[in-house]
Image (cartoon, rainbow, N blue to C red; front, side, top):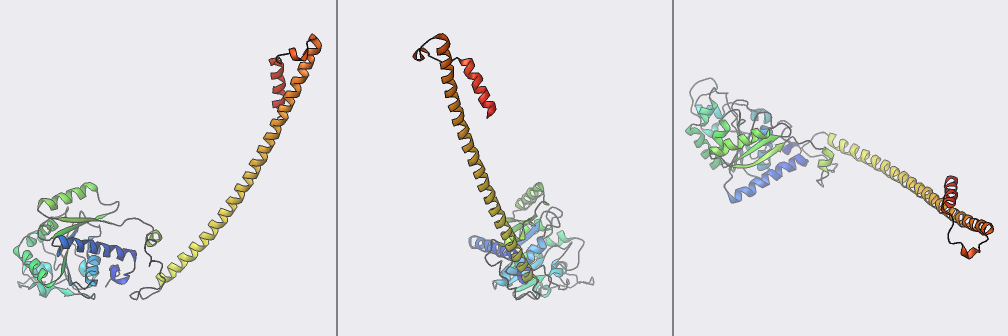
Length: 338
C-alpha cells in the first residue's frame, strides 16, 4: 500500500486529524439524514479527489465500520494503484457483463470487490476502461449495485470522475445520499465550482459540503495547533525515525532562535535606556539655557531702564515699559548664542 494513505501510515499527523474531523462531520450529518452512500467528486481533474476518497474511507474503517470504496472514475482510475490491488474484474465488468478478455460474463457485485490490507476496508476497482462509462452508469445495474453494497457495508464511498468534464458523477449524485465536492487552492475556478454545484442540484443531488485541498500553510504553524504534534516518538506504523530527527532539529533551531531573540531584546532595552538618558540630559540642558535666557532678559531690561532714567531724568517708577525694538534685538542675540 502506498504512503498516500496517510491516515494509516501516520495517524497522528495533522492531516489525519483533518480527515477524522471530516468523518465526524459526515457522521453527525447522518444522524439527521441518511448518509450511508457518499460521492466524492471534483470540478476538473488533478484536484485530489481520489486521494481524499481513499483517506476518508480509511478513517471510517478505523472506527470499525465496514467500508467500501467504489472507483467510479472509469476513465482515469486510481484506487487500484493507491491500494495496490488488481483492477479487474471491476465496476465496468459488473455493469457491462463482459470480462477482461471481452467475453460475456455476468458478475455478482461481491465477486468484484477486493479486500485491502486495512481492516474493514474493501475496494471495488474500476475494471477495464469502457468506451461508454456514462451509459453503463445509467443502467439498472448501478441501482442494484448500490442496494447490494448498502446491505453488506456500513459506508459506501464513490470516487467519481470530474463532473464538469463528463456526466458520470452527475448521474451517480442523484442515486447516492450525499455528494462532496473537492476543490484545490489557487487552482479551482469559482465559476467552475458554481457550475458543478448547479449541475448536481439540477438532477436532484444533495451537496453535503466542499473540501478545499492543497492549502498552503507552514507545517510547523499547522502542527502547533495540536498538542501531540511535538511528540518525538514515531508512529508504530512508520519504520524509520526520520520524523523524530526532523522534530528534534526543529526544536534545536527553535531554541537557538529564542536565544537570539532574547539577546536582541536586551540590546534594544539598553539602547532605549541610553536614549532616555540622552533625552534627559538634553532636557536638563534646555532648562538651564531657558533659565540663563530669562536671567539675561531681566538683567538687560534693568540696564535699559537705568539708561532711560539717566538720559531723561525720569524716576524709575515712571518708566512703564522697555523699548520693544531694543528688547527684541537683545533676545535675538541670546537665541543665536543658544
